Length: 383
Image (cartoon, rainbow, N blue to C red; front, side, top):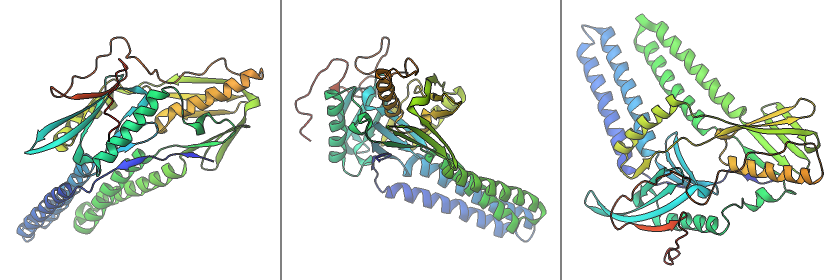
């Protein structure tokens, strides 16, 4: 049974980023120790408090710089292209790509290659060659994916369209685990430090340790209760931990998809973090657009059973919708009492009316792949 989870990650060891992270964290800690030694005789509580504060600042700096710089990498999957900074992921699906550009630019005294993908929604993701370990192989991988989409822009992979073969989708929980992990690290470190050094406010330390236990439970529950989805010839199954729902296709009577709106607060925080990323990591760039249109698919059974699929939590929501449409079409042909339609895949092909692509970053950039005009560059296959 194929598991839809694989992708190729292009990641380099950022020696300069690690050095900056370690050196500045060490400076924060050394400053805290120096102040503590100076104040320990006259103000022991304040001295310990300064050390805890310096350690907390060093920890927060390490987490922030790791997320925005050291962990930056690119992912090429069958679904799309992803630019990752810690728990921040920006994705453009291959069937949404409107243009691919390449150009050469002088950065900090070095001549470097850049590659950028623009989507039909107006988003643009670009990266410099030193963000990936092998730029030639990475470029070839991206162009091969675009060639495949250009040849068959609406066709999902064969494992999705093969109705006689079960397919297994697994909910992605990396972002949630990262958030819980950061909470665990901060509360555990802070609570332990306060209990060890700041006895007058030891109750604060115990409160933080309690939060650390809750964060640890959150990590375990998030991982164990992630949703698994199996679509097979005789029906669909979904389970979270011990709770399992099996729905035969014969009992299906309704499938609907409710579009979810991206919270405005989350969008605002995302733009703030994006500004930080662009300042900290100059090897990549993101021009944001409107939030991706995710939804909630609800599958209803005749006996009151219900399966809910939150698209935001899956790496390949369009594949899920494509497989469900194919299964429903097969049931329609057998005159089964099912829903009249399922929401289609995101549109591909020409740009939507009113959509304006971001301008080329420099004069003379090479537009290698243009969906809106169908232009073809004969040299793009010469990797």
